[in-house]
Length: 246
Image (cartoon, rainbow, N blue to C red; front, side):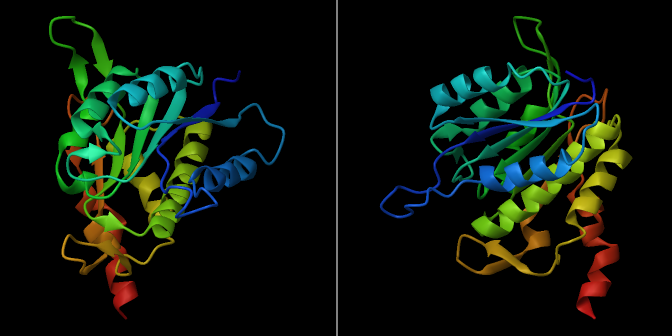
């Protein structure tokens, strides 16, 4: 396996029951398209995808234990399920954050495709650098996290996440992405396709909210102890606003 290989780890809970959605909608086919695009020629690097379902705390533990066996040095973790301010599927956000932080330093980025999870800072704990209490085991969480503050349209969010996965996986195959500036550059390239003022979801009162109101991004540069909210530093909030308002 090449040192430039990148893995996408997909931990996904079923989005709908069979009587509601017979097609079993999943984000995975969108990401498989990225894999086919990224691996378009014979090179010394590959983009690989590993998938596992989860439902609650215990099954999330099992899913991450399974996915963490991927040997690629640079990995992106996608966690997808219906969410709230406290839960992702039936797994507690704080539990998920602890498990991700403990999974090892090869997970460079975390995408949480769940409604309302970004409305507080609980998931940001996944990105911490330090030692676990009482065990002194080193934990090195991801360098960046993407989440949503409100309920989001399923198709809109998976299209945005597909772009983020494409741009970050290509960037990691080309070199090291550790600094805040580098991470923001990749996010800006990935999000440049999207109208920041378009309706992207709904708040708890069912009022429309825009992409810039929904999205939330944390970054922990390599070596930093904690992640910081850098959402308003994204180009979505600056250089693109005037263009879309004209």
